[in-house]
Length: 302
Image (cartoon, rainbow, N blue to C red; front, top):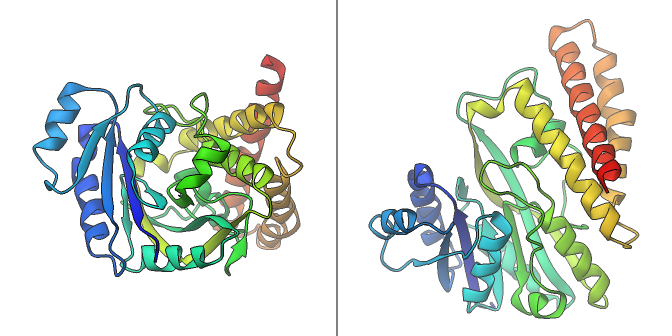
């Protein structure tokens, strides 16, 4: 097995307990990571708080700028492992997470591997929230492959890449992706497309058995959050689409849209007399319209 560095990043001391749970799950892996790196947003208070609280064998460092992409890039530059894996600060890894993920690197063409993220709702998933929209809360959604498959990009909360990839194609773009509570995204998508375009015969694989359990707070179960998160998903798609010549830039989104129109929506229309189905139809329509609004807003601005 190749050596693995696992990178966690966080921007607030309010997630201390989440980070400690994440670290604990990484220490219980059947495949022990070579190192665990915690990257913090630039803040002396944040650094003091985490240094005093996390186990001493965790490598703690601070980013030079705020933002998820900056933090991940610092983690990559700090990492010494052949594989760099990323997990969100509010996720807990299944004990076989790394084992399932890293074994796929036995294929020399595999440059990245991602896994599934199972939602763990603090207050239970609302009946009106369709599983097809689990991507809004950073989790695996209905419409993703159910078996190991080659994909365009992994989920951001559960992914890994060979470290040499970053030397060849560069790091995460820092003008997209999260900045604290800002809801821009897609930095892992843009990087993955550069990998597939820039490295001959490269493959990125989705392994559903490489599982993390992703915490979903109750404040995300609101129509406002769905609209805002969907809108910025569209904005992020527009930014990438404008800057990329890669033929697969919107292939996943187009396939997902076909699934919604051809399967998810008709299935609920057949049961529209039921309150749950009717409510989920409205939420799907809300999200789809917000994504389109964000996409065209991004295009108009550019």
